[in-house]
Image 1: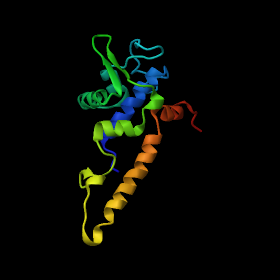
Image 2 (image 1 turned 180 degrees about the vertical axis):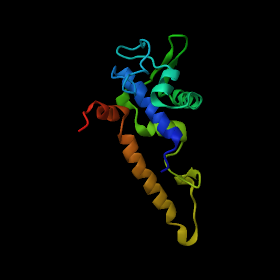
Image 3 (image 1 turned 120 degrees about the vertical axis):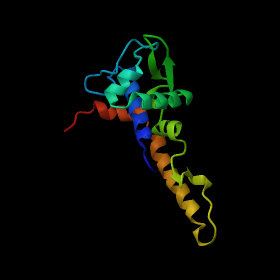
Image 4 (image 1 turned 90 degrees about the vertical axis):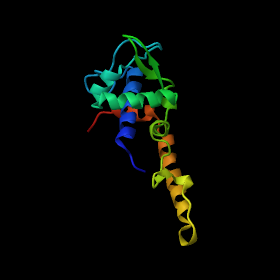
Length: 159
């Protein structure tokens, strides 16, 4: 599995929006991405520009990521001066795997193709099973870890 900048940025953005929805602050120590009142109780709208600044993500790059997350049904966007982004579902029902698939497609690739599409013959025929097992192991971890699980780490004091 290769974690691209796009994958990492998407996860950081989703965590910041989730933190704002929980009222816990969105990224940065100053909570600067928390903007406006959200349509759901306790939720807040997060503006793309504030999110980009608080997470140190180029705004033009972030806008494409936010579009993919919205199209995947993970974010709601609200237009207008008071607009922004909120989670489409509770943070405990959005997995790391959901986010990774929304912005990058398959979790594991072999030569740029999904692991399941790899085909071999002769002595190498067993490689496909290895790639599928790797994909399954990665999926087990990322699908079992929710945004809420990761936000718990934010609340823990560091020793």
